[in-house]
Image (cartoon, rainbow, N blue to C red; front, side, top):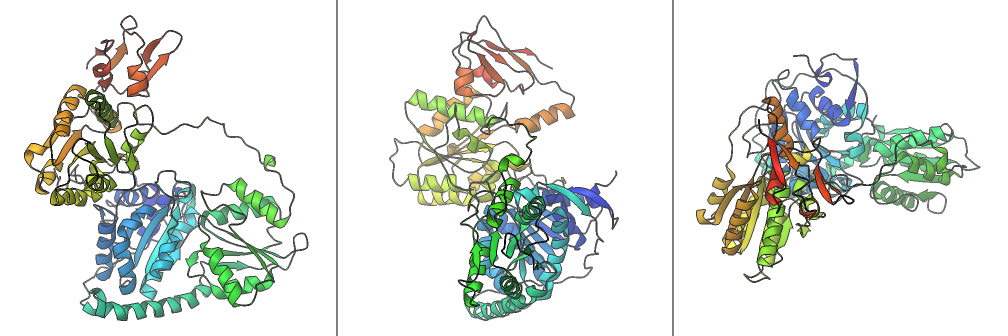
Length: 635
């Protein structure tokens, strides 16, 4: 089989890469052995890309860990054993891993240790857009931030060298625009990994109890002092000074990451790139103080461009105050740029033009893209989650009770939108059961409490909440939506599938067995095919009416994976059509079930099924009260 472009052992060859592929290539070129983490957009492709290389580079030891904390701990063990290791996660995953992160910062690294934090400005697929550069300041850990796929590859490779040189963890911050953007990347030499490794029996370093950590804390501060001096000479930070002026002012800019790439384009568009001074940061913490002072001495006005929080701006203003530049230089940042969302290229041009008093109108930029109407994300046609939510809603009407449905974050969270409107609260992974534990303290047995989460999420952080519920005897129903995949982030496997990241067989963890092991009695566990609406409603009613901690497992494979299985086995899915004569236009299929494959003609007052979208799940046949929907063929 021909190797993928990112696995080629051809230094000097130029290829087009996704940002995440470039990060993975950098990890490979560094001679890294261990890679672990949990899938989360926009980081998911990094470990997946590495896993696709395993056949060519068998030294790679990779896994989808149960959650980000475990993933980081796996990488930490690798570093303790003097092998290069990486932990990959999205920004909110660092919150889960923070306990381990904040302490390993004290002990530092032996083998190179890099933590990838893929931040998500604009909340494209996240519940918040937190700026994880703060974790560098908080943990006293250097933070790298690349601005192009080429830089991502090269900077990642160097991050392991930096980590080992200074015996420090490195936080490698990316953003969605870099992770999912593409660019030209020149391949480098793939370093051979260490052939020998072994655990370091330095208990005073690796056993982080108070007496040891007091010493490690001092070591950490001394280490950061050295790094703070050395970053002034780092090739990752570039200072270009200009003696020219723009409209009578000497202008300077500081930026990093994708905003720096947009800044370069803006300066070129406004034809002032040679007339201004720029400080391009590759290491965004600690800042190169000496370079910043040189820049401050050379400008009248300084603009700091960064997504999201004013971290660089605040630190630069602190340096300006300490060095006596206050009143001499105008330093601008978040009073010109917003503190939320990512910066599109046209916004950077507009703000740079305003800052430099250059004439510019936004309309000057040609717009060739189509202007499409906004559309909320929806559950896919044939999604088994929709069937589960419909069954829950139907039961609410039958019992004439409104349930409190707390949820985790995943595909199923889209059930909050019309017409299902089946999610009432959602905070984070594992939060569904955690919140239900709290609700159970406040509401009586007459108020049904449902904690709704997916199979991968249950393994991730749902189990502790379940154990808490059993231990404290909190009255609730936990609904686990088992679609045999971590679907929202790209169909990664999890313990419930029993398939490892390399697609080799692992050990499958049976959810119902795990639930029993957590202390839920067998009579309080229900299991049903999500798409069998009648049985779902019947069993859900039994579960609602029972007492104590109950678990309902709604199981059906993700519809997209199911279609893939049909295609692989050369099976034609069932075809469902609507009998126009039997259809009375009640719109239950359209207004209450809400499958995207079902349309409704207001003029004819009839429903129809778009065969190009239909997955053949057959749930609509269950829900039509007139029996107007039927299967046409079966193969």
